[in-house]
Length: 298
Ligand SMILES: Nc1ncnc2c1ncn2[C@@H]1O[C@H](COP(=O)(O)OP(=O)(O)OP(=O)(O)O)[C@@H](O)[C@H]1O
View 1 (spheres, protein in one colour):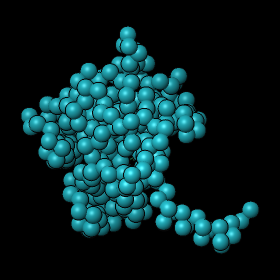
View 2 (cartoon, protein in one colour):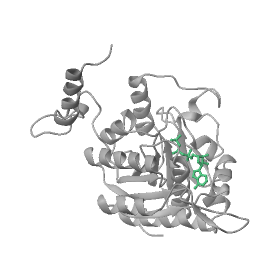
View 3 (tube, rainbow, N blue to C red):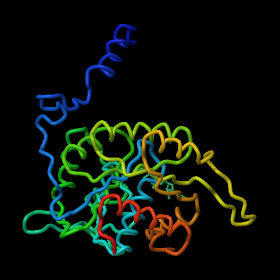
View 4 (cartoon, rainbow, N blue to C red):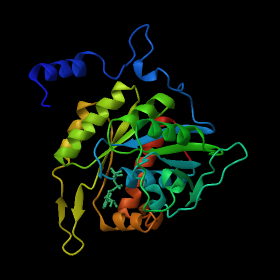
């Protein structure tokens, strides 16, 4: 049945005027918090950041993995939690696929590689090709367990690798844990930037601080002729978004074949080629984020 204009108008009134997220109003319990667990810190973890973007495929997992490895390289006890239940990438990026063991208290024990503790839905699936086909409530239950039923054993920082979008996962994370802030990843392509702005709006709506924006896959430098090309358009757009939203521009990660290859073979750039320009770009972004959230300098 086609929606009538009056139905559409009604729907748009709900979207624009009736506080559809149930955001806090004076003297009320926000709708999105009713019946949900209370917000509480992740046990034994000092700082938590989310790496996000509303757009898929812009490099969130690549940036999240390399940031976590950069934090470890800077001497911090680091973990990464893959909260992308339907498309986990951390097992491949860290070259890990064992089933995690449980503590006597039934907490999942993270798998470690390159000095970073990791946890992912991918470790709990029967094999690499298995998909997760769940409705919302199952998803929310899994996220709650990943957030609160992992024995991290003491971390200075936990990096969350988020799925694309501004939906169930992002909202339930914002409701359930205390986040130091979110790092937004985007390419300079107009479609990605539009979605990045939606992501910024979402974090503002749920009162999570924005730590800054990482521009990924902006410039490709030809290895044969050394010509640099802005593959997805000029970088000015991103700086404009940062200015408009009062956010810091955290850094620029080039489009480079090795970054993709390093990830595919399970040895991300910060481990494979830490002294390359791209390796240093990730470490520099980690330093800035660390400073912003008060991670003690090593
Ligand atoms: N700077 C880069 N240079 C070259 N390839 C890159 C770069 N960043 C990411 N990639 C590649 O782009 C693809 C998408 O990256 P990635 O999986 O990290 O994105 P994502 O945003 O996490 O995706 P999804 O939305 O599906 O979770 C991967 O093949 C990755 O290796």
